[in-house]
Structure formats: structure tokens, C-alpha cells
Image 1 (cartoon, rainbow, N blue to C red):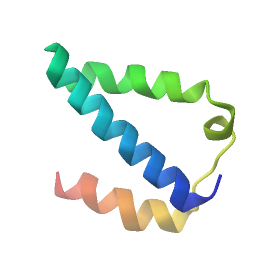
Image 2 (image 1 turned 180 degrees about the horizontal axis):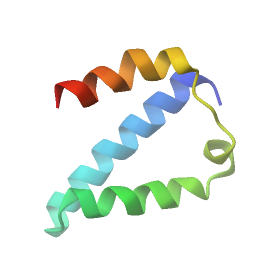
Image 3 (image 1 turned 90 degrees about the horizontal axis):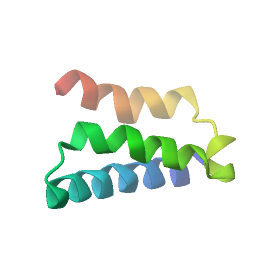
Image 4 (image 1 turned 135 degrees about the horizontal axis):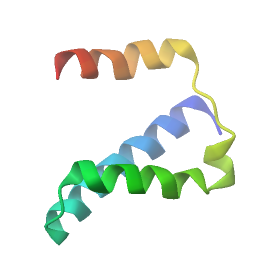
Length: 66
């Protein structure tokens, strides 16, 4: 799986996890690890690796801003 595809899949999983958590009345931080575990069972996601540049440019600014 390419880096951009993986970023899109992970971003979609985060959005879906937040929406499901709010609809069910469960805190999203509880739903997101469960979503991550379920994504870990998908073979294409399990073997994927992100390039370090994409982590620095996409995820680190969001974490620092938050």
C-alpha cells in the first residue's frame, strides 16, 4: 500500500471512529484504539510502512498544534 493511500485510509478510520463513538455515546478515545486493532487485522495495512517525511509533514504538526 502506498504512503498516500495509507494516510487516507487512516484518516478515514479516525473520522469513522469519532462518528461511531459519538453516535453510540462512547468516548471517541475508547473507540479509536478498537478501530486501530481491527485495522491491524487487515493484511495490506499490517505490512504497510509510512515514509518518515510524510510523518513529519502530516502528523507531527497536527500533534504539536493540538
